[in-house]
Length: 389
Ligand code: PLP
Ligand code: COI
Image 1 (cartoon, rainbow, N blue to C red):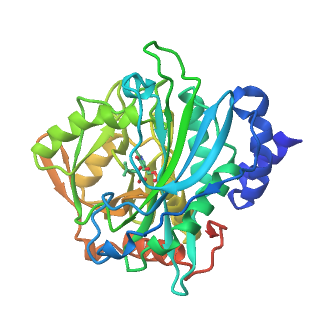
Image 2 (tube, helix red, strand yellow; image 1 turned 90 degrees about the vertical axis):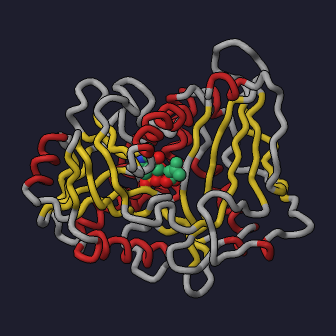
C-alpha cells in the first residue's frame, strides 16, 4: 500500500504530500538510519545581535554573505538528534574527522524568494529532500525523512526571514549538507554524521552569458559512479579540468560521457538545454547526470507551452552539426544557482560556434521571467511547486 502511495506521489509530483507520507516508511526497514522520529524538537537559540544591517543588499556576491543562523543536527547511535538552530559559526573538529580524508559528504542547493507582499516562498524543497536521500544512500550515509527535512528548513528560514532579499534576480540560497564525523583513520562508512543547513542572500551566479567548451579528455562522472548524487567529491574532481578550460577563456565545460566522449552530459553547475525550432532538447538524467530540479521545471513548463520536449541521449555530433547549420536558436544551462544561464558560444575542438544574441531568445527569456515570477508567487502555481514559510 505504501509502495503504491509512493509511486503515485512520484508520478504526480504535485501530490508531494502522498510521497512525503510514504517515503519515510518505505525506506525504514532498509536502512538503520531510519530508526528516527519524524518530528523534531528543535532548540532555537537566536543570536543576540543580527548582522543584517551590515549587509549591502544592492551588492551581493554569490555565496560569500551568510545569514545569522544555521540549523544543525547530529546522527549518533543510529538516530538523528540534538536538532538546533544557532548562530552561524565555524565548526570545530578533530584532524582525524573522516570527511576530511575520504570525502563522505553530500549537499543540496535550493532557494527562497520574497513575494511582493513580503511572503517567503520556497521552490520545490521536497525535491531537494528526496535527492539528498538518494545521494545519502549512494554515499552510505543516513537518510533524513522529508518531513524532518522540511521542518528543519522552514523553521530556519522563518527565523532568518529578514535575510531573504526582494530585488530582481536575488534570492536566499539555501545550502543543506551532511558530513561524516567519526574520528577514525580507516576506510569505512562513518557511524556519526552532522547535518547542517545555512543560507546566503545572493544575486545571480553567472552575471554574463557563458562561453563553454565541450570536454573530450576529462570526465565528471562514469557509469556506476556517483555522478547522479550531489556528492562533494564530484565537484572536487571537476575543478582541475574546469581550471584548464578557464585558462583558455571558457567559463564552464560541457561534460561528455566518460567511455566515448560522444554524448553530451551536463555542465559543472547546471543541466544543459538546446532549443531548435519548437523543440527543447536536453540530455536525459542518468547515473552520470544530476537530475536537476530546475531542468525538470523547464521541461514541464515547455510541455505546458506546447513545445516538443526531447529528454533523451544527445550526441555531440548532432549538436555540432546543428550548430554548423544554424539550427540551434538557443542554448542555456538550468540550475538553482545558475537559474537560466544563457550560453553565448560553444567550442568543440578548434571550432567556436556563436549562438544568436540573448535578445533573440524567445523561449529562454520568457522562461526566465516566468520562473522568476512563479518563484515570487506572482503566478498561478499550477504544479504545486511553491511552499510558503
Ligand atoms: N548539475 C550539477 C552538476 C549541479 O551541481 C546542479 C546544481 O545543483 C545542477 C545540475 C542543477 O540542479 P538543480 O536544478 O536541482 O539545482
Ligand atoms: C546549485 O545550483 O544549487 C548548485 O549546487 C551549484 C553550485 C553552486 C555548485
